[in-house]
Length: 318
Image (cartoon, rainbow, N blue to C red; front, side):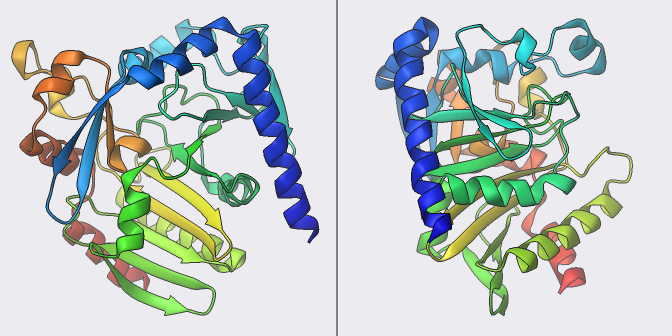
């Protein structure tokens, strides 16, 4: 009962934050208003759809320079001292602050940075992600690892957006592209099939079992990518009365070859959790118009583990 009351009160605080920020902050007000004019189109893959959104304000994120030299040369935009004076937040837990994202993809888009300037790392923060998802049941909470779509890999943060926006949420409910590979009381492990991306989904109400399963996946991926500060991955997490649903998307590449191409071959997409969840954000109109099913399939195959590669990983785990 206490937990339910906290969720209701916290959700009200976030609603109040949105209402006040959209009144006080002209940039946010304009950009959320522009979402009504955002164009989308659907690419049919048969058993699932991917949709493409033309959103020019996202060029800052898609084209962000995230090499060490570029990061060192710019002030961190997630540190409180560098944020706009008008941007206010709501505290969460020991050291997180919930902010509205002024360059939204979702009708409600949050950025949730740490108060400390520490590197983007999920291992010791997965439990916090579960807590955030539980406190924000009308949102999908997501994590972009370093070199996996995070435009501030030097400052730990989550994001969250309106639940129901990212296609993977509905696709998991349909179960047409996922199969149960392990089922226990409190935890299910699902693998996606025919989805053009290797994805593992954890579902259940037992927090400790979810955390243990995630640790096992993380450790196995770390063995495969020992040269990385953490294994490359994106995570989307949601919470409902039946528990948590955690989509884990292991990766093998930061950006596809199309990002670096020149001329008509270039497509400015730097895939992050939302894109790999089936909502591809294109900041350039020409990319929105011309991106094809074959392009999407090729981009997924370059940056994500294949289903076969993921099957080998799962077989070792269970």
